[in-house]
Length: 415
Image 1 (cartoon, rainbow, N blue to C red):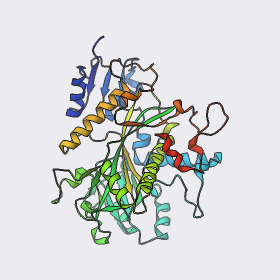
Image 2: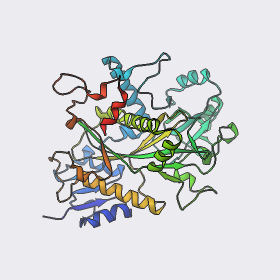
Image 3: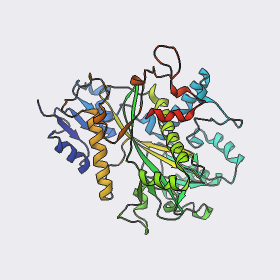
Image 4: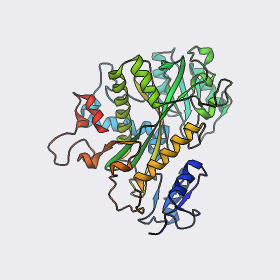
Protein backbone atom coordinates (compact mmCIF):
# COMPACT_ATOMS: atom_id res chain seq x y z
CA UNK A 1 0.00 0.00 0.00
CA UNK A 2 1.24 3.52 -0.76
CA UNK A 3 2.48 5.60 2.16
CA UNK A 4 0.18 8.20 3.64
CA UNK A 5 1.48 11.73 3.06
CA UNK A 6 0.91 14.34 5.76
CA UNK A 7 1.28 18.10 5.96
CA UNK A 8 1.13 20.27 9.05
CA UNK A 9 1.36 23.94 9.98
CA UNK A 10 2.70 23.06 13.44
CA UNK A 11 6.18 21.74 14.18
CA UNK A 12 5.06 20.23 17.46
CA UNK A 13 6.81 17.08 18.63
CA UNK A 14 3.53 15.44 19.74
CA UNK A 15 2.31 15.74 16.15
CA UNK A 16 5.47 14.98 14.17
CA UNK A 17 6.44 12.02 16.36
CA UNK A 18 3.00 10.51 15.81
CA UNK A 19 3.27 10.86 12.04
CA UNK A 20 6.80 9.45 11.96
CA UNK A 21 5.81 6.53 14.22
CA UNK A 22 3.31 5.54 11.55
CA UNK A 23 5.88 5.79 8.77
CA UNK A 24 3.95 8.58 7.08
CA UNK A 25 5.64 10.74 4.47
CA UNK A 26 6.10 14.46 5.20
CA UNK A 27 5.16 16.77 2.30
CA UNK A 28 4.68 20.48 1.87
CA UNK A 29 1.13 21.88 1.95
CA UNK A 30 1.28 22.70 -1.78
CA UNK A 31 2.14 19.05 -2.57
CA UNK A 32 -0.32 16.17 -2.68
CA UNK A 33 -1.25 15.27 0.90
CA UNK A 34 -3.72 12.86 2.50
CA UNK A 35 -3.76 14.10 6.10
CA UNK A 36 -3.38 17.76 7.04
CA UNK A 37 -3.15 19.03 10.63
CA UNK A 38 -3.72 22.66 9.73
CA UNK A 39 -4.24 26.03 11.35
CA UNK A 40 -7.69 27.60 11.18
CA UNK A 41 -6.33 30.17 8.72
CA UNK A 42 -5.14 27.43 6.36
CA UNK A 43 -8.50 25.68 6.53
CA UNK A 44 -10.17 28.97 5.65
CA UNK A 45 -8.02 29.09 2.52
CA UNK A 46 -8.66 25.43 1.62
CA UNK A 47 -12.42 25.97 1.69
CA UNK A 48 -12.36 29.42 0.13
CA UNK A 49 -14.63 29.14 -2.93
CA UNK A 50 -12.46 31.59 -4.89
CA UNK A 51 -9.53 29.16 -4.73
CA UNK A 52 -11.47 26.52 -6.63
CA UNK A 53 -9.71 23.87 -4.55
CA UNK A 54 -11.50 20.54 -4.26
CA UNK A 55 -10.55 17.89 -1.73
CA UNK A 56 -10.20 14.31 -2.94
CA UNK A 57 -11.85 11.34 -1.27
CA UNK A 58 -8.52 10.35 0.31
CA UNK A 59 -7.91 13.71 2.02
CA UNK A 60 -8.86 14.66 5.58
CA UNK A 61 -8.25 17.89 7.49
CA UNK A 62 -8.62 18.80 11.17
CA UNK A 63 -11.20 21.62 11.07
CA UNK A 64 -14.72 22.08 9.78
CA UNK A 65 -15.00 25.06 7.38
CA UNK A 66 -17.03 27.19 9.82
CA UNK A 67 -15.73 25.80 13.11
CA UNK A 68 -16.02 29.34 14.52
CA UNK A 69 -19.78 28.83 14.97
CA UNK A 70 -18.78 27.12 18.22
CA UNK A 71 -15.32 28.51 18.93
CA UNK A 72 -15.98 32.24 18.58
CA UNK A 73 -17.48 33.37 21.86
CA UNK A 74 -20.11 35.56 20.22
CA UNK A 75 -21.13 32.90 17.67
CA UNK A 76 -21.44 30.21 20.34
CA UNK A 77 -23.75 32.48 22.31
CA UNK A 78 -25.96 33.26 19.29
CA UNK A 79 -26.22 29.59 18.34
CA UNK A 80 -27.04 28.49 21.87
CA UNK A 81 -29.78 31.13 22.16
CA UNK A 82 -31.26 30.02 18.85
CA UNK A 83 -31.09 26.36 19.88
CA UNK A 84 -32.93 27.04 23.14
CA UNK A 85 -35.67 28.96 21.31
CA UNK A 86 -36.09 26.17 18.76
CA UNK A 87 -36.49 23.60 21.52
CA UNK A 88 -38.96 25.88 23.33
CA UNK A 89 -41.00 26.25 20.16
CA UNK A 90 -41.11 22.45 19.78
CA UNK A 91 -42.24 22.05 23.37
CA UNK A 92 -39.13 19.98 24.05
CA UNK A 93 -38.73 19.20 27.78
CA UNK A 94 -35.05 20.19 27.56
CA UNK A 95 -36.19 23.82 27.23
CA UNK A 96 -38.07 23.73 30.54
CA UNK A 97 -37.64 26.83 32.73
CA UNK A 98 -37.81 27.31 36.50
CA UNK A 99 -39.95 29.85 38.37
CA UNK A 100 -37.31 32.54 37.80
CA UNK A 101 -37.35 32.04 34.03
CA UNK A 102 -33.98 30.26 33.93
CA UNK A 103 -33.47 27.13 31.88
CA UNK A 104 -33.56 24.07 34.11
CA UNK A 105 -31.31 21.95 31.89
CA UNK A 106 -29.74 24.37 29.40
CA UNK A 107 -28.36 27.00 31.77
CA UNK A 108 -24.67 26.20 31.38
CA UNK A 109 -23.21 29.43 29.97
CA UNK A 110 -22.96 32.48 32.28
CA UNK A 111 -25.30 35.38 31.44
CA UNK A 112 -23.52 37.01 28.50
CA UNK A 113 -24.00 40.01 26.23
CA UNK A 114 -22.30 41.10 23.00
CA UNK A 115 -20.74 44.55 22.95
CA UNK A 116 -21.33 47.08 21.69
CA UNK A 117 -24.69 45.81 20.32
CA UNK A 118 -26.19 44.59 23.62
CA UNK A 119 -24.93 47.47 25.75
CA UNK A 120 -28.38 48.64 26.88
CA UNK A 121 -29.45 45.08 27.74
CA UNK A 122 -26.28 44.65 29.76
CA UNK A 123 -26.86 47.90 31.70
CA UNK A 124 -30.41 46.77 32.50
CA UNK A 125 -29.10 43.44 33.84
CA UNK A 126 -26.23 45.07 35.73
CA UNK A 127 -28.58 47.41 37.59
CA UNK A 128 -30.53 44.43 38.95
CA UNK A 129 -27.40 43.50 40.91
CA UNK A 130 -25.03 46.48 40.96
CA UNK A 131 -22.51 44.72 43.23
CA UNK A 132 -21.84 42.00 40.64
CA UNK A 133 -18.56 41.45 38.80
CA UNK A 134 -18.37 40.94 35.04
CA UNK A 135 -15.60 39.68 32.77
CA UNK A 136 -14.90 41.14 29.33
CA UNK A 137 -13.26 39.10 26.56
CA UNK A 138 -12.49 39.73 22.89
CA UNK A 139 -14.82 37.45 20.91
CA UNK A 140 -12.12 36.01 18.67
CA UNK A 141 -8.97 35.81 20.80
CA UNK A 142 -7.55 33.12 23.08
CA UNK A 143 -4.91 32.44 25.77
CA UNK A 144 -6.30 35.16 28.02
CA UNK A 145 -5.42 38.00 25.62
CA UNK A 146 -7.44 41.17 26.16
CA UNK A 147 -9.44 39.92 29.16
CA UNK A 148 -10.30 42.15 32.12
CA UNK A 149 -12.84 42.31 34.96
CA UNK A 150 -15.19 45.20 35.76
CA UNK A 151 -17.66 46.03 38.53
CA UNK A 152 -18.80 49.50 37.45
CA UNK A 153 -20.60 50.77 34.35
CA UNK A 154 -18.14 53.65 34.14
CA UNK A 155 -15.33 51.19 33.40
CA UNK A 156 -17.05 50.11 30.19
CA UNK A 157 -17.69 53.71 29.19
CA UNK A 158 -14.00 54.47 29.71
CA UNK A 159 -12.97 51.35 27.75
CA UNK A 160 -15.26 52.35 24.89
CA UNK A 161 -14.06 55.95 24.90
CA UNK A 162 -10.27 55.49 24.93
CA UNK A 163 -10.04 52.13 23.21
CA UNK A 164 -8.30 50.43 26.06
CA UNK A 165 -8.82 49.09 29.53
CA UNK A 166 -6.07 47.83 31.76
CA UNK A 167 -3.60 48.61 28.95
CA UNK A 168 -5.51 46.24 26.66
CA UNK A 169 -5.86 47.87 23.22
CA UNK A 170 -8.81 47.11 21.00
CA UNK A 171 -10.03 48.41 17.69
CA UNK A 172 -13.42 49.06 16.17
CA UNK A 173 -13.11 45.64 14.53
CA UNK A 174 -12.95 43.87 17.91
CA UNK A 175 -16.26 42.65 19.21
CA UNK A 176 -16.34 41.77 22.87
CA UNK A 177 -18.48 39.56 25.03
CA UNK A 178 -19.21 40.47 28.63
CA UNK A 179 -20.25 37.69 30.99
CA UNK A 180 -21.31 37.51 34.59
CA UNK A 181 -18.19 36.42 36.44
CA UNK A 182 -18.46 33.12 38.31
CA UNK A 183 -17.41 34.61 41.66
CA UNK A 184 -18.11 31.47 43.69
CA UNK A 185 -15.72 29.02 42.00
CA UNK A 186 -14.97 25.67 43.58
CA UNK A 187 -11.59 26.10 45.26
CA UNK A 188 -8.96 23.49 45.99
CA UNK A 189 -6.21 24.60 48.35
CA UNK A 190 -7.84 28.03 48.25
CA UNK A 191 -7.09 28.39 44.53
CA UNK A 192 -9.35 28.74 41.53
CA UNK A 193 -9.06 26.23 38.68
CA UNK A 194 -10.79 25.24 35.49
CA UNK A 195 -10.96 22.08 33.40
CA UNK A 196 -9.49 21.60 29.94
CA UNK A 197 -11.36 18.73 28.30
CA UNK A 198 -10.85 17.39 24.78
CA UNK A 199 -13.76 16.44 22.54
CA UNK A 200 -13.42 14.91 19.07
CA UNK A 201 -16.20 15.42 16.52
CA UNK A 202 -16.07 13.39 13.29
CA UNK A 203 -19.55 14.30 12.03
CA UNK A 204 -22.28 16.80 12.90
CA UNK A 205 -25.18 15.24 10.96
CA UNK A 206 -25.50 12.68 12.42
CA UNK A 207 -23.60 13.92 15.46
CA UNK A 208 -20.64 11.69 16.36
CA UNK A 209 -18.60 12.94 19.30
CA UNK A 210 -16.02 11.42 21.62
CA UNK A 211 -14.84 12.44 25.09
CA UNK A 212 -11.17 12.17 26.00
CA UNK A 213 -10.57 10.73 29.46
CA UNK A 214 -7.18 12.36 30.09
CA UNK A 215 -8.01 16.05 30.43
CA UNK A 216 -6.57 18.22 33.19
CA UNK A 217 -7.26 21.02 35.66
CA UNK A 218 -5.36 24.32 35.44
CA UNK A 219 -4.81 26.15 38.72
CA UNK A 220 -4.14 29.78 39.47
CA UNK A 221 -0.85 30.41 41.26
CA UNK A 222 -2.36 32.84 43.78
CA UNK A 223 -5.15 32.04 46.25
CA UNK A 224 -8.60 33.25 45.20
CA UNK A 225 -9.76 36.58 46.54
CA UNK A 226 -13.06 38.13 45.44
CA UNK A 227 -12.11 41.53 46.88
CA UNK A 228 -12.69 44.36 44.39
CA UNK A 229 -9.09 45.48 44.93
CA UNK A 230 -7.92 42.23 43.33
CA UNK A 231 -9.94 42.54 40.11
CA UNK A 232 -6.83 43.51 38.14
CA UNK A 233 -4.77 40.59 39.46
CA UNK A 234 -4.99 38.04 36.66
CA UNK A 235 -2.93 35.52 38.68
CA UNK A 236 -5.99 35.27 40.95
CA UNK A 237 -8.68 35.11 38.28
CA UNK A 238 -7.40 33.63 34.99
CA UNK A 239 -6.22 30.02 34.81
CA UNK A 240 -4.58 30.27 31.37
CA UNK A 241 -1.08 28.77 31.51
CA UNK A 242 0.07 31.52 29.11
CA UNK A 243 -0.65 33.97 31.97
CA UNK A 244 0.13 31.88 35.07
CA UNK A 245 3.60 30.84 33.87
CA UNK A 246 4.75 34.44 34.38
CA UNK A 247 3.74 34.41 38.06
CA UNK A 248 6.27 34.24 40.89
CA UNK A 249 4.52 31.18 42.35
CA UNK A 250 4.42 29.17 39.11
CA UNK A 251 5.80 25.64 39.49
CA UNK A 252 7.35 24.41 36.25
CA UNK A 253 7.53 20.81 37.53
CA UNK A 254 3.80 20.19 37.56
CA UNK A 255 2.81 23.29 35.58
CA UNK A 256 -0.04 24.10 37.96
CA UNK A 257 -1.99 21.14 36.59
CA UNK A 258 -3.91 18.20 37.98
CA UNK A 259 -5.21 15.24 36.01
CA UNK A 260 -8.96 14.74 35.74
CA UNK A 261 -8.45 11.44 37.54
CA UNK A 262 -6.94 13.28 40.52
CA UNK A 263 -9.88 15.69 40.53
CA UNK A 264 -12.31 12.76 40.57
CA UNK A 265 -10.48 11.15 43.50
CA UNK A 266 -10.45 14.44 45.41
CA UNK A 267 -14.17 15.07 44.84
CA UNK A 268 -15.13 11.50 45.69
CA UNK A 269 -13.20 11.85 48.95
CA UNK A 270 -14.67 15.25 49.87
CA UNK A 271 -18.13 15.24 48.30
CA UNK A 272 -18.92 11.57 47.69
CA UNK A 273 -19.09 9.14 44.78
CA UNK A 274 -22.68 9.88 43.71
CA UNK A 275 -22.24 13.66 43.68
CA UNK A 276 -19.01 13.33 41.69
CA UNK A 277 -20.65 11.07 39.10
CA UNK A 278 -23.49 13.57 38.71
CA UNK A 279 -21.01 16.40 38.12
CA UNK A 280 -19.31 14.54 35.28
CA UNK A 281 -22.69 13.52 33.84
CA UNK A 282 -23.63 17.22 33.87
CA UNK A 283 -20.39 18.07 32.07
CA UNK A 284 -21.11 15.49 29.36
CA UNK A 285 -24.66 16.85 29.10
CA UNK A 286 -23.57 20.44 28.46
CA UNK A 287 -20.91 19.41 25.94
CA UNK A 288 -23.40 17.38 23.89
CA UNK A 289 -25.94 20.20 23.86
CA UNK A 290 -23.32 22.80 22.94
CA UNK A 291 -22.49 20.61 19.92
CA UNK A 292 -26.16 20.08 19.07
CA UNK A 293 -26.66 23.86 19.19
CA UNK A 294 -24.35 24.24 16.16
CA UNK A 295 -25.05 20.95 14.36
CA UNK A 296 -27.64 22.56 12.10
CA UNK A 297 -25.41 25.43 10.95
CA UNK A 298 -22.05 23.66 10.77
CA UNK A 299 -20.84 22.82 7.25
CA UNK A 300 -20.72 19.05 7.74
CA UNK A 301 -17.93 18.38 5.25
CA UNK A 302 -17.05 14.68 5.24
CA UNK A 303 -13.33 15.49 4.86
CA UNK A 304 -13.30 17.17 8.27
CA UNK A 305 -13.00 16.33 11.92
CA UNK A 306 -12.34 18.60 14.88
CA UNK A 307 -10.58 18.34 18.23
CA UNK A 308 -12.10 20.94 20.56
CA UNK A 309 -10.58 22.14 23.81
CA UNK A 310 -13.44 22.82 26.25
CA UNK A 311 -12.73 25.17 29.15
CA UNK A 312 -15.16 24.47 31.98
CA UNK A 313 -15.36 25.97 35.44
CA UNK A 314 -17.14 24.38 38.40
CA UNK A 315 -18.79 26.56 41.04
CA UNK A 316 -19.02 25.70 44.72
CA UNK A 317 -22.45 24.14 44.17
CA UNK A 318 -20.69 21.70 41.79
CA UNK A 319 -22.47 23.19 38.82
CA UNK A 320 -20.31 23.19 35.64
CA UNK A 321 -20.23 26.18 33.27
CA UNK A 322 -18.79 26.44 29.76
CA UNK A 323 -16.33 29.32 29.65
CA UNK A 324 -15.23 28.86 26.05
CA UNK A 325 -14.45 26.29 23.36
CA UNK A 326 -11.09 26.33 21.57
CA UNK A 327 -10.65 25.32 17.92
CA UNK A 328 -6.90 24.76 18.21
CA UNK A 329 -6.20 23.69 21.79
CA UNK A 330 -2.51 24.06 22.57
CA UNK A 331 -0.26 21.10 21.79
CA UNK A 332 2.70 22.72 23.50
CA UNK A 333 3.88 20.72 26.50
CA UNK A 334 4.74 22.50 29.75
CA UNK A 335 5.75 19.31 31.60
CA UNK A 336 6.80 15.76 30.72
CA UNK A 337 3.37 14.48 31.85
CA UNK A 338 1.78 17.08 29.59
CA UNK A 339 3.86 15.86 26.62
CA UNK A 340 2.90 12.22 27.22
CA UNK A 341 -0.79 13.09 27.51
CA UNK A 342 -0.85 15.22 24.36
CA UNK A 343 1.07 12.62 22.36
CA UNK A 344 -1.55 10.08 23.44
CA UNK A 345 -4.35 12.50 22.50
CA UNK A 346 -3.02 12.98 18.95
CA UNK A 347 -2.37 9.23 18.60
CA UNK A 348 -5.94 8.35 19.60
CA UNK A 349 -7.43 11.06 17.35
CA UNK A 350 -5.53 9.70 14.33
CA UNK A 351 -6.55 6.11 15.10
CA UNK A 352 -10.23 7.12 14.99
CA UNK A 353 -9.97 9.34 11.91
CA UNK A 354 -7.59 7.06 9.96
CA UNK A 355 -7.83 3.55 11.50
CA UNK A 356 -4.50 1.66 11.68
CA UNK A 357 -3.71 -0.20 8.46
CA UNK A 358 -6.21 1.86 6.44
CA UNK A 359 -5.87 4.72 3.98
CA UNK A 360 -7.87 7.94 4.42
CA UNK A 361 -11.23 7.45 2.71
CA UNK A 362 -14.12 9.83 3.37
CA UNK A 363 -16.58 7.31 1.91
CA UNK A 364 -15.85 4.95 4.78
CA UNK A 365 -18.42 4.66 7.59
CA UNK A 366 -17.25 6.73 10.54
CA UNK A 367 -17.87 4.12 13.22
CA UNK A 368 -14.50 3.28 14.79
CA UNK A 369 -13.78 -0.12 16.26
CA UNK A 370 -13.63 -0.29 20.04
CA UNK A 371 -9.91 -1.14 20.00
CA UNK A 372 -9.20 2.08 18.06
CA UNK A 373 -10.84 4.41 20.62
CA UNK A 374 -7.84 4.44 22.95
CA UNK A 375 -8.59 6.90 25.75
CA UNK A 376 -11.72 8.21 24.03
CA UNK A 377 -15.22 7.26 25.12
CA UNK A 378 -18.17 7.56 22.75
CA UNK A 379 -20.09 10.55 24.06
CA UNK A 380 -22.87 10.38 21.48
CA UNK A 381 -23.23 8.65 18.12
CA UNK A 382 -26.63 9.49 16.65
CA UNK A 383 -26.14 6.99 13.86
CA UNK A 384 -25.50 4.05 16.20
CA UNK A 385 -28.25 5.25 18.56
CA UNK A 386 -30.69 5.40 15.62
CA UNK A 387 -31.43 9.09 16.13
CA UNK A 388 -32.37 11.53 13.42
CA UNK A 389 -30.67 14.45 15.12
CA UNK A 390 -33.81 15.77 16.82
CA UNK A 391 -34.02 13.29 19.68
CA UNK A 392 -36.47 11.03 17.87
CA UNK A 393 -35.57 7.56 16.70
CA UNK A 394 -35.79 7.06 12.94
CA UNK A 395 -38.83 4.86 13.24
CA UNK A 396 -40.76 7.79 14.69
CA UNK A 397 -41.99 5.53 17.49
CA UNK A 398 -40.53 7.51 20.34
CA UNK A 399 -37.90 9.67 21.89
CA UNK A 400 -34.37 8.69 22.73
CA UNK A 401 -32.95 8.63 26.22
CA UNK A 402 -31.81 12.20 25.53
CA UNK A 403 -35.39 13.36 25.86
CA UNK A 404 -36.18 11.62 29.13
CA UNK A 405 -36.44 14.57 31.49
CA UNK A 406 -37.67 12.38 34.33
CA UNK A 407 -34.39 10.52 34.61
CA UNK A 408 -31.50 12.86 33.86
CA UNK A 409 -28.99 10.33 35.14
CA UNK A 410 -29.66 8.25 32.02
CA UNK A 411 -27.39 10.76 30.31
CA UNK A 412 -24.55 8.61 31.55
CA UNK A 413 -25.53 6.00 28.95
CA UNK A 414 -24.29 8.39 26.22
CA UNK A 415 -20.81 7.17 27.07
